[in-house]
Image (cartoon, rainbow, N blue to C red; front, side, top):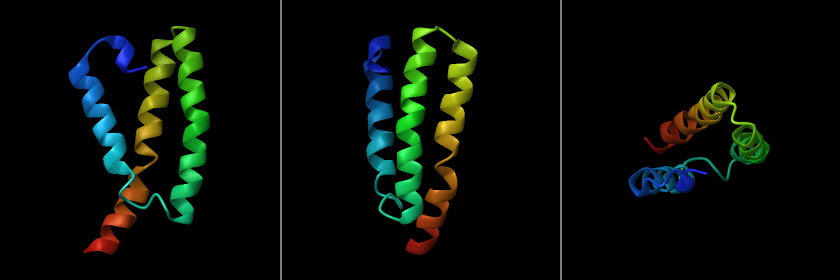
Length: 80
């Protein structure tokens, strides 16, 4: 979806963030659960985009990104 906007810099940033996030805790039980939930959220994002529901899309994308925060914190704490 990001690539469809036509902003190659934004697309590159989003893809790099996605790749980086896979380094932190993705293989843990919590990471696997979050990853499965993310798949459902991705489908919801597509549906909201089709309906052009900008407000709901923004809210879902924010929740989607922030849902990973505890997982990252935990993974990073283990590396220190």
